[in-house]
Length: 458
Image (cartoon, rainbow, N blue to C red; front, side):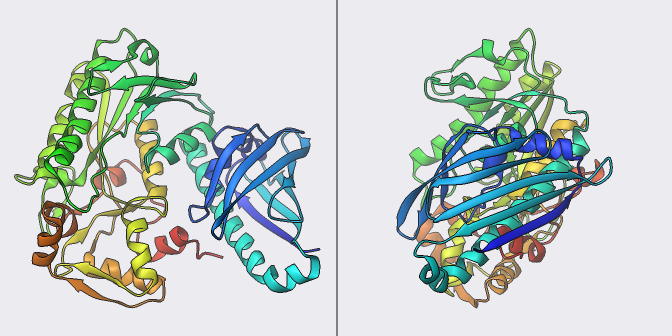
């Protein structure tokens, strides 16, 4: 019977490592972004508790039910497949001390494929490689997350945090990151709440359950109409503007009126704040841009936070760059073309791409939340790249050519404002304030980030 063992040193005590695994959110954090997995139910890791998943196997979706057993507080737990794609799957999770401040995480798996020897002969090698790839990712994420929580919250302070845009690209990863770290998260939702951790709000009608926001430690505002689209209509532009400006103003004014307002209000913004500036290096002290739809939107977006700031709440606009992840955004859109050798860029390739990994977006938001940063912050990697270099680096990581170039005039003819505002605009934005306040990037350059993002690290 095949067995696999994965062991890593973790920069956290064994007790903290075990506690992280017991909390809501940890299970979601461990799902690799390239895997088609949806968590239907997660009851916990004590004996008899189950996790129910829907996972994609080729064109089919398979239900995987795992039941936990042999739970030992602070040291280990097992999960056993009750139903799923394997003939047998038994997985030991073990946490062992390595001194006072570090520990060892060991995953030991015994499994068997369907059809016995035939299944092993046909699919054994590919399954083994797939599992190795998954657990390499799981151990990296565990190490990254625990390191952040140990650095910024070593005493385990439990914050109560509200998050808007919790179902979006950033929010859907930020919420489990925070809950796995021991924090309580309330989600701002636009439909009537069905769960205790939901707060109703609607920027169109001006409705918001203000009482549920009383006494929170922080509000992180990420909601906004998606910008990426084949072409903007006037209605789409109005939704982009209103969702950001009206939504932010509603939250900001509500927080400013509260008897027990939060200590911190972090509000998403965008690097479009600076406008199309060519190769000019842009930091938080650079002047705002003077033209462009998204430039105006970003500046109005930030202005809408002023009521909260004037009420004495520490208010920080987060000027977020191009977020790289397989679960959404630009990279997910580009990959299908690059995988089949049809990668390339729009225009002359000299426009700068202010990229940042999703991992560093989460880390940077946590850094700003847990430190005393007082002003706008650029959430970008330290090494923004010209588009031609960016696409060449991506193609090289995929072992594919990058030969296609779409002239800017043709792109503008096809997509209108989207080409000018998104595809060929240049923002050479640098994360000066993050670096000055001590944030340590997990991925400073694209060549080292892509293997992690694509799951290529063994």
